[in-house]
Amino acid sequence: MAGITYEDFLDLSFDPADSDLVCTFRIVPADGMDVESAASRVASESSNGTWAALPTGEGFTDMRAMAFDIEALGGGADADGGTDAAEIKVAYPEGLFEPGSMPQILSCIAGNIMGMKAVDTIRLVDCEWPEGVATSFAGPQFGSSVRQEVFGADDRPILATVPKPKVGLSTERHAEVGYEAWTGGVDLLKDDENLTDQEFNPFHDRLVESLAERDAAEDETGEPKSYLINVTAGTNEMLERVDQVAAEGCEYVMVDVITTGWAAVQTVRERCEELGLAIHAHRAMHAAFDRLPQHGVSMRVLAQISRLVGVDQLHTGTAGLGKLANEDTVGINAWLREDLYGLNDVLPVASGGLHPGLVPDLLDATGTNVCVQAGGGIHGHPDGTHEGAKALRAAVDAYAEDRSLASKAEESPALRTAIDEWGTETPR
Ligand SMILES: O=C(O)[C@H](O)COP(=O)(O)O
Ligand SMILES: [Mg+2]
Image (cartoon, rainbow, N blue to C red; front, side, top):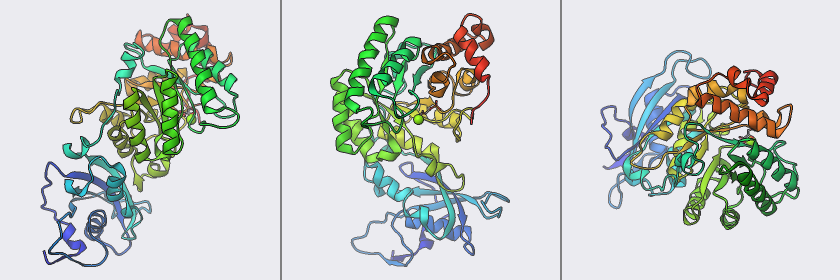
C-alpha cells in the first residue's frame, strides 16, 4: 500500500473474519456528504486513518477497519425528517485492540467518531464480539447464579429496595429501614446511586450498622439477606471500600459503572474476585449516552460492556413500565443471558418507578430470572416500609404461584393496600 485515504476504508464486498469485532452504527451524514463517504470516514477515524491522505510502507501494520455494509433507513429516519439515515457495519481487526482494555476499545469504536463533522449524528447500536476480544475480559464472577446460590429463590425474582429519600437519612434510620424491608420480605437492601460517604451517613458506619440489622433480619426470617452498599468513589478509595465490605462479611458491592468509568470497574472486579464479592452495577448517567435514538451509544452496547468487564447484576430498565425511559429491556436481557464463549451471564435488574401492581406485566416481559427493585414502591406504601416490602413480596410470590394479584390480595392486606393506592398504573 503506497498510502491510504478514507476511501480505502470502504469495501462493500468485504467479508469480515471471525476474529473481527463488527460494529453496527446508525448514521446521518452531514449536509452534502453521501452515505458511502460518511461510512468510510467512520471506519477510518475509528481505526488508523484521519482527514488527510497518509503515507504507509515500511514499519506500518495494516490495522484498517472496513465499512462493508450500508443499509438505507428510509424516509423520516433522520432527526430532521430527512431520508439519508443509514445503518452501517464496520469490521475492526482484532489486532487493533489491546486485550482486556475496555477504555482502549471504546477509544476506537466510540471515540472521535462521536463528534466527527462528517456525520450529523452517529449511534453505536450493537457489537458482535469475537471470541478473542470477549475472552480477554474476565466477565461476571457469579452472574445470575447469585439468585439461587445466595438466596435460594427458586422460581421467584430476588427483591431489592433503596431507602427513600435517597439521600439525607441518618445511618441509624437507613439501617432501620433496611431491617423493616428485609423482615417484610426483600432480599437485598440497596444504596442509591448518589449515596456514598457523606457526613449525614458515613460509609463505614452505614456498612457496619446495616449489616447488624441484616443479621437480625436473617435470624428473624430464617432467610438469607444481603446489602448492595455503594462503593462508588475514586478507584483507590473504591478498593479500600471493597476491602471494608469483605472484612465486615457482606456478599456484594454496588458501583455506579458509568460515572466511575470502565477501567475503574475492571480494577474493582479484580479485587472482588480476590475477595469473593459480587458486583451490582447501577447505570446512573447511561441516558446521556443512549436516550436520543440517533446518537450516542446504545444501552445494549453499554450492557455488553458491563458483562465483559464483569459485573454480576445490571440495571436494564423495566420494559417500559416504570418511571424511566427504557431501550429494549427484553432484548438486552436476552443478550445478557446468551452464551458468550462460556463467560457467565448477568442478572438483569428492573428498577425505576416499580410497585406491586406492575409486577405481573413486568415478569411477563422479563421472566423471573431477574432482580426487582422498588424504592418508592415500598417506602411510599401508606402503612410504611415493612408493609410495603410485604406487598412486593406477595406480588412476586403470587406470580410464582400462578395467581392473580386480586386473589393474592385477599390473603395479603399489605398487597391490597398497595393495589388500592397505586393500582396498575405506570408512574411518571
Ligand atoms: O436507583 C434506583 O434503582 C432508583 O432509586 C429506583 O427508585 P424507585 O424505585 O423509587 O423509582
Ligand atoms: Mg436511584
